[in-house]
Image 1 (tube, helix red, strand yellow):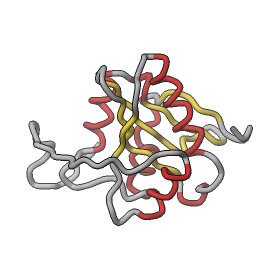
Image 2: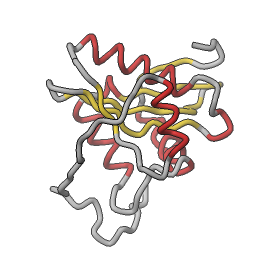
Image 3: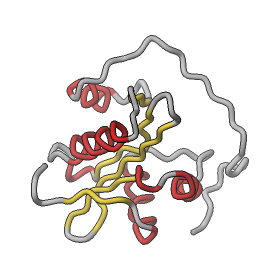
Length: 151
């Protein structure tokens, strides 16, 4: 890992910077309130919510989860001007290490099909497409109008 940045767990004072990062990376959607997603992660397992920091500010994030069967990776984002400098790789490797410590045998992630550049990044890091169909069902509506909350 290059010495110009450090990995650390997310802290609540990082919230605005991380939400801005997710927005700049195109990860947010109107039906998902990013503030609620952060709070839900902090309530569940905050040690698996990581950021890289440069000059005292968050510039990349990754949110990992483990359900006892498999791990998941969400919200991998790197500030656009800093891509290609090892942030994503460092976060993924640290998340994999933390999941292995918990006995996690495999890690899955979801990427939107149109995001070919990110798919190539994951392939380069040893990930392969798995022959499955991902289905989802919304159990809690963050905001049915799609209007982002004000925080």
